[in-house]
Length: 182
Image (cartoon, rainbow, N blue to C red):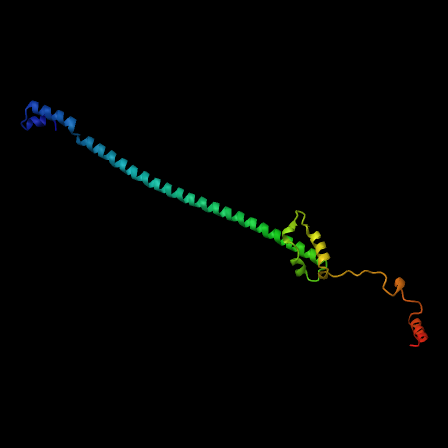
């Protein structure tokens, strides 16, 4: 309200002046009120929008953290599988090489000969050989020779000097038998 409007209502100049001064101190004009109200509504809407965006970011980060954790778990599992694969492959190579060596040593029962070897002392080298295998096979042949085929030694036969048929062959045996009365 203006001072003139107050005077029109029948107030004195002093009363109208006091009300106008008081209105300026304790009250806000409607236009100012509406402007502040719009600012408040805009700020509130902005706050809600920012809160929503913040929640989305938190969720995305949580999802990213979960995704990162899943990726880390997958990488760790892949490394473990790779290590297990390498260990299995090395074990298969070692077993194959040992089995071939036992067969080359002419074991009568390769399974039994293999069981008597100390696997903890056998190590697969980079070049595919097995360290400690030759020593163990040699020791096994000495201690348990029955597990391996004997190699035939060519040479002289007992009772046959020189390894040849005697001259005269069967005739000589008949003559000796006749001489002895057999």
